[in-house]
Length: 380
Image (cartoon, rainbow, N blue to C red):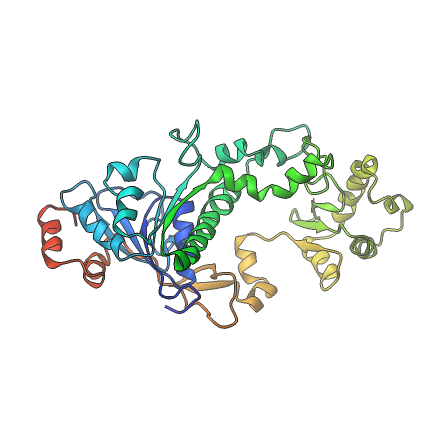
């Protein structure tokens, strides 16, 4: 495949959420990623092993029962030929399967062993269960989200699973691969969603330490408290977002809204924010969302329509950028970011669990006797 990671070979032990997202990112960039799924497990999501399983795109897949005799040895033979491995099990699971980093990295000294967990491989909570909402609770990120006087808003699992988890693991794996080219040595990448979501909050932690960010929700520049950085409902029930922070952008906002009230000249007076926000809310209620979008189209007022999933696909800017692609009839986000020279190819359709088992074992050089043993034992 084309792309900046062309020539990199990665073994992915399939899981949920951040692990597959990491593997998708690496595959999107041209790495050859083979997806190892359990032969006997049921689907982990309603769309698993279907064309709608977008995060499984771009990889060939094989299914194997890792508890059967010879299965772990066959996986070690694959790992011997890989540049990196990705897994998202609880700490200790890969070790119990005989596929832990001590064994794998001893056999393949350049192997990058990527580990994705919520709490990390060490620490008091490392062996306990959790989900995105729990990990971002502990990092401080969740407490900052939501309205004043209400519990924190329950966000999508973007901050923990995907931003602080899968994307951070992909970054770590690529960093380790680059270092391995110089040193000839691989290493373990321990990516934890608590660590990653804390890192995503770096700016807020810095502002908090400087006394410029309050731990009170709905009291800060970027958390919806400011009238010029918030969302507003329009006459049709749809909404717009406003992000007019800089003075020149704020001026363009007031111009587009036809606001001449001198009270709005006090942009950074926090005491006036609730009143000014209330006034803007009434103004935005006078027109439909798309009317406001037309008024502010092409301006620097930083006002944009808030689109749903279907509308986002159809928006002119996203179409200009080809931000979404259609694969086997399923519209989905295109690989990102963009490259001027090593452009990735269109991702492959998501594969069924055992679709490429034989081909992978053959092409990766697993001997015929091992494959025959696996079939006899019912592992594949």
